[in-house]
Amino acid sequence: MKKIMIPMLIASAIYANDVENNTTKPQLSPTVLKGVTAIKMLGAELKKNVKAKLQEDKSGLEAMNFCSTNVAEISANVAKKFPEGVTVRRVASKYRNEANKPDSVDTEVLEQFQKELEEKTFEKKPKLVDVNGTKRVYVPLLVSKVCTKCHGQNIDPKIAKVIKEHYPNDKATGFKEGDLRGAMVAEIKEESK
Image (cartoon, rainbow, N blue to C red; front, top):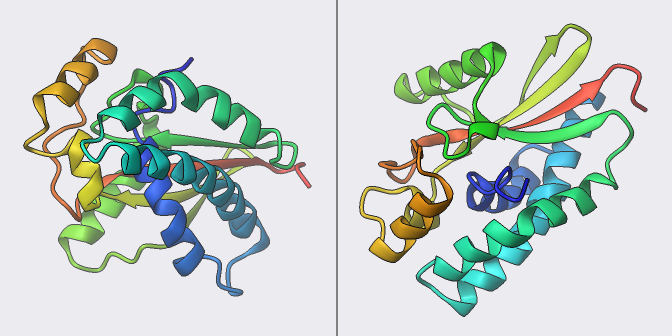
């Protein structure tokens, strides 16, 4: 369970600031706002913790070790504050953890985000999808410079060793700054208030 939230933790934490600045505009529907709010709650808490570890050790090794032992507990505590029927998860086409493997709907959304990036029509904004009565709010995650410490093309051998130990089937490397890393997804059951 500890490993479930690690793969996109840093990207999620960094994204929390962007969500605050770019996606909480009044024109968003109540459902989208509910999803974005839950994503922001989790992202802000993860960002705070990861940022502290990155300040302790700029290499990213401490942050990686911290994530492998503490993320599940932090995420569970934040999830208790979500409205009933709301969950948040991460997905990626090139995932590090099997728990972040996209389903068919996730794949379609990720492919659309990627297409928009390639066609230069991409806007970093949430996408709402209805899946059998459950609303999904997708928020894209782009690779920032700090993400490349664990997901880039030239990963420090010490970090690469930790990744290999925890994720022997890792697919989440080779990214450049600005690439699509994946998405955070808030799932909202229709009856949730």
